[in-house]
Image (cartoon, rainbow, N blue to C red; front, top):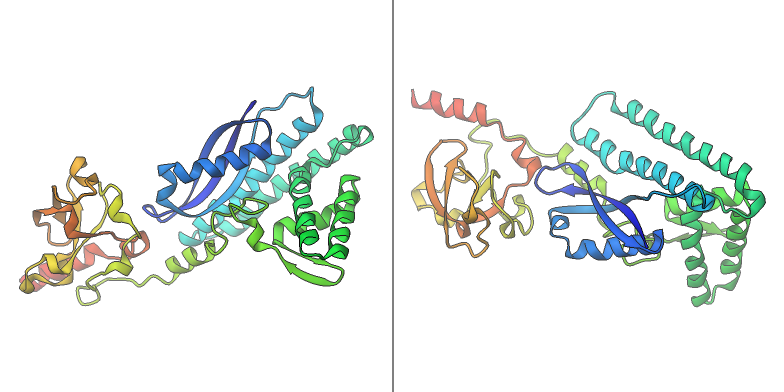
Length: 341
């Protein structure tokens, strides 16, 4: 039994940014560790606050006495850092419109690829003569054999044999075969015997290679949502936000310090205007996490500054971060103040 650190990335429903989530597990090998980590994520409450959950990587402390394991751990660390940049830093830069970030991140990713190449070359010199498998694709080779089984089950024996030939070639350090395996796991599809085969569904949490919690969930839609989020600079531009504007199931999590949307029907008819819908708790406390919803929360109106007490059940939930970030509270307050003069 060995300790493994499994790293995931996910889009935080509260911050509106991609973040890292780590799990430490004990397992007999890295493959059991990955399986265990995905299983534990289901019951981990922290994961409920994230969507677009993807595997960033796995790392463990290895002894040089086992050269294969030692080089595997070194290679997996570099792959983890590459995925960290691609899964977290790059989309966050897109969300934050960080100038110059593309070249900076490309340079960082290239550095880790170069380190991975160096590890591979050293392992080839030291270990290939003794039967060592290429550490840069050791994990991929393990899972690739399961794709052979799928083709066999489908009765596509020529394709199964073609893939097995590629796996055997990669195990023997054939450059073309290693590149083929790399592409299969990077692109999630392959060309065998001149035929395109999409394998994306097998890269889900319960698939052959557990990379994505949900293969339909992807970074693009979150970055796109931020890029196309409407701005609210005036009183007239402010709508009465509805269920589509709040974080899904946010009524089940704590409300501390969040932007809350009051249900329209909670207000008297004469007060049912957008500026009366935006509130935030004035302090933390049990009431903010009272899912039952009957306890009163002391809240402050984010525009008018009014202090009130509303039952937790009076709120639709927490406003999505990309919407909240585009409300120009200063301009709206100024407009209201000038209107009173």
